[in-house]
Length: 434
Image (cartoon, rainbow, N blue to C red):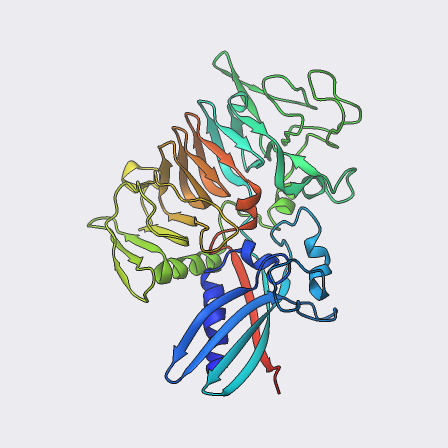
């Protein structure tokens, strides 16, 4: 019974998002097993740990962890081939729980399937308007409609999540190579030269006005020869055309971005209500907000205002739910968030990240601070001004870029995808010490 209690507790922590994907991906191989602190029930105790698992290898789980990396058993599989991204497809893991009472001991093991959630990685919006000098580093912008102010946006580096094949098809030349960060829209891309909107690259690319060779739009075309200067010489995409089908492929088959599924919203909301920050904001009256008290199983009242300091340690979900029916872009329905959420770390005890969800409202970032995590604003706007940096994914109806705000994805942020963005299934167990 103690062993089973340890297993259920561990599965609960996984589903609540207490452990990031970064700590789980190579557990027991190049990083230590993910362990649950010892729990006590009456006269008994339990401990539990998670390691990678592969039924086709011998052994099926890594040898006992000694502090050094191993390639035995499942640790030699393709999941550890560089660059080791967070898993796009499910992987199996073993949760081993040991129950003790006096001199008696019982050990059980459950095999679970874990994957990154369907939340796409990148900046996905319905529309975007850029002013100031916003920047994007190692992350791409995907849009459902026209993009204005392209010459004001700066893109650097390769997208850490997507390859050329992810965007243009698996049979594309150089499909396995990372794709340079750029704009991809099923509308048009415009620049604001001399106060006027000029549509870029019909029928194929030109590389003036800060436009990337790797930009794609509905009005692009096939590229059959090396683009002329000032385009970079060497590798170039098969086409500058980007279609609705391309967007569905990149976003994991979704056709309704920037929305998630209602089941995903319910899961994020439940996590915020149990171990995060949750606010229900009616049309009138004071917002009803509660926040988890770390180290306990209790919650307390939270006063909603401009959020200048990180509400919770570690990784968590902050879910703000305005009553439907009014303008989601109004100042009265806008969350002000200026807090630092970080740093990122492969050590789950040190890692700090957040998933911020705003339903039927908007959010604005005004300071020169930064956050690791994901921002989901399906009905309203993400408004980034000042020098605020979001390191992670953004899903928004409207993206407003002012000042020197920036969007980034670094290797640590990719490995340690925050709470609420992980799918866990399975949990049937068997005895392994009988």
